[in-house]
Amino acid sequence: MKLIILDRDGVINYDSDAFIKSPAEWIPIPGSLEAIARLNQAGYRVVVATNQSGVARGLFDIVTLNAIHQKLHTAAQQVGADIDAIFFCPHAAADDCDCRKPKPGMLHTIAKRFDTSLKGVPAIGDSLRDLQAGFVVGCVPYLVLTGKGEKTLAKGGLPPGTQVFPNLLAVVDELLAGAAVHAAPDELTPQKELKRKNA
Image 1 (cartoon, rainbow, N blue to C red):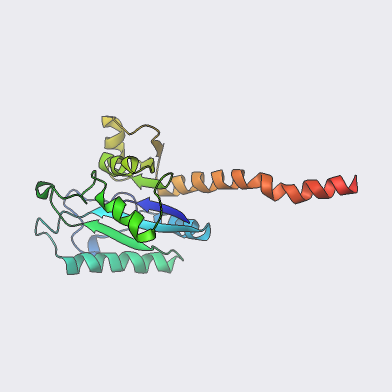
Image 2: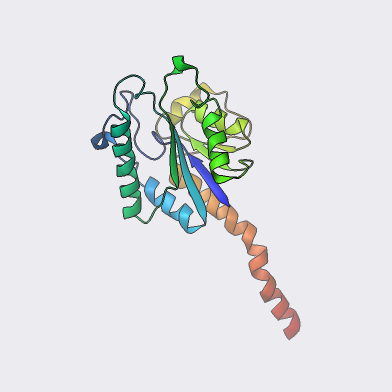
């Protein structure tokens, strides 16, 4: 199974320092949903892992968060994209839970739900905590420069092996181009054999 883990705010949709508190405030970054559709077409299962401390802060409730995610699902489906699951942490930092990134609890839950190892799974985020949570469980970290990405890059301290791209679409271009390169020798084998027989 090919799995990929995406942060939400700043990766799929525009981020806000005042939090995304309603479906109306959830606005996709151009190209992000199309990128997810391309991942689906390439056989990836796409999972979102997002900190949503606005719930603990009383800025919005679970019903509103579900409505925001329903808008995400609907918008994705309109461009032929499918998000398998959205995992979220509703806690504040002071709650000291295990699911709030950079702690890896949410990612361990994803591994259990999909009954798979996360070793080598791409984890894409715009914040250091997204990358740290993924790195701890063996994911390959990708930083996008949308959302908080440029500030994250400027601060430094990224996990070893972090790859940096302008946006989600650019990451997907790279992932799928890499897959095509790896697939090329197998695809060429029958042609080589055919040439050999003709010779």
